[in-house]
Image (cartoon, rainbow, N blue to C red; front, side):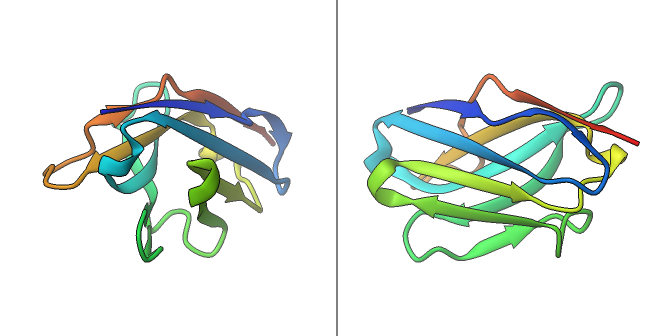
Length: 119
């Protein structure tokens, strides 16, 4: 497994932008896909975006399509989530996750970073 650490969360006004970063360390050669999830108080964890580590194909949840962009820097073992036109409903703890080759689901998780969008 890999170790993941998120950064870049904070407080922003509606309509603003934030960029989250997720630095991976450890067995990064085993990673097939990395993603972002979020969980708001009292709600289920929600898929936000994912990117294939090799090839770079991207995937987005419906609620963030057109506003969020996931990208990666393989040399830095870092994944980014650029969040634009933020809305109060984007308020949540954002988690970075990694899925190893052969794994059926994301099997490594970061501790999370808080994003708060004020109206």
